[in-house]
Length: 489
Image (cartoon, rainbow, N blue to C red; front, top):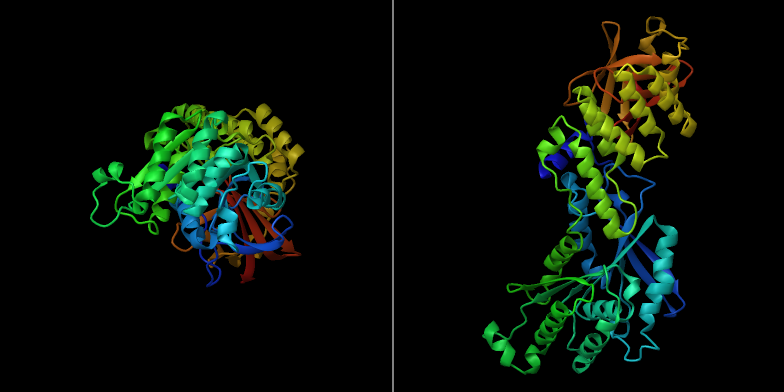
């Protein structure tokens, strides 16, 4: 499966190659909100997938990871998520928003209240101020995670135990269950069986904090203060393994890590545990096979992801479209049809899925269904290329290729947000596109200012003109949409 996603990532930009448009590398922003509950301003460090995405989707909604001790763990957490949700086409984790909370008074915020009728105000800040603020201002999905280390880990366990509905998944790293002579540990063991933990997830990471020279086998008979921290975590771990109460629970002991080095590896293992259902179990053969079995496998997989996360999940529209057009080009018609229909099922409000399905019928010489689907696409979005295709089928094309002055489109164009130039030149009365590092492509005329790419299904290039002079063009492809600006002749 890894090979498939890497292949897709490389092909995603088969027409344009991505490059940084400036010298700054940004992975997030800071935002300050005013808390009436805490009577202070709180600084947030926020990462959204569009910051690092090569193909951002403005309509997509994302799960949110709330991170305690935010300034200490923001960079590592974002790095893990970006690497496993975007880099090299990875799909082991979903893309997600990270909201890291900077500390002001750490002990005040992270020490649980012993009075359940008067919980720590920090929890009210999370539930009544921070989460609503993020939901209002960002594209959030209804799946929330909480991650905390040390005293922050204690807060994670407190929230899971006493405010169970607040988060879907939790990572507690080296939780300070020893605090206040294990009073919070005792409360957790007492209250946990009374709560409905069905579907909730928890991962606990524990470091090796044994005194120097002590063997692990000696721990069970030791009662010293030096070992109370690790003993209290193992006591909680033993209880949770015997009393899941619907909780999906995992833990790991890191013999070679300390209290301060364990967060990074625990964040990684914790996220992989929480999303152990997310990676698509498919082989390269599943995608290259001529049958339509991959469509069924995709549908079953994302139905499971949807059930686990509690909201609609689907493979990206461009991902499905790419493999559908690839199948169409190889004349694997059953496979192409199944994939195009899967996109319609998942993205019924997209005009592109109907346009693409019409292309399939056109390849099958079924003009009736092709016209019907082009019309559906136009009802959603009056796309000029779709209109041109429909006009071609209904004999309404006015302009003919031989009457077009291709020279007016020639010149050098620069891809917006990319440091790549494209040269359009006339060669043998054809408009040829030259892209660095790639084979030349021919732009084939469709209608006024609209071209397709010869030999490539699902490509549309629309020129924006100022009289007879080009201002730029938009290339809509199975793998995304790209903008180019005219530079010079």
